[in-house]
Length: 80
Image (cartoon, rainbow, N blue to C red):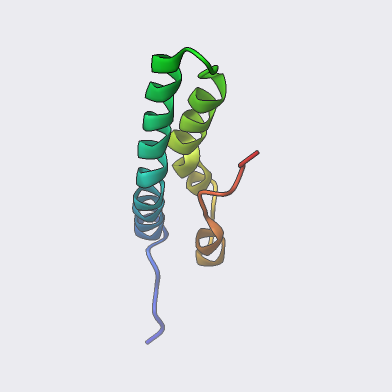
């Protein structure tokens, strides 16, 4: 009997993986944001943009239609 894969479950698992991978990156950006605010030396614009990019990272999964595509999902996609 052939195996069937629940693509919706696979998408959710992929999103969970991406969330785990982005957690330390978001935490690091939080530290950088606080440092920039405390010192008033730097702009927080780039930090805010990166945090938003990281928050939005799971959205890439919504349009994926195959397991092969889900395997390519990464926190580096869309990084500038």
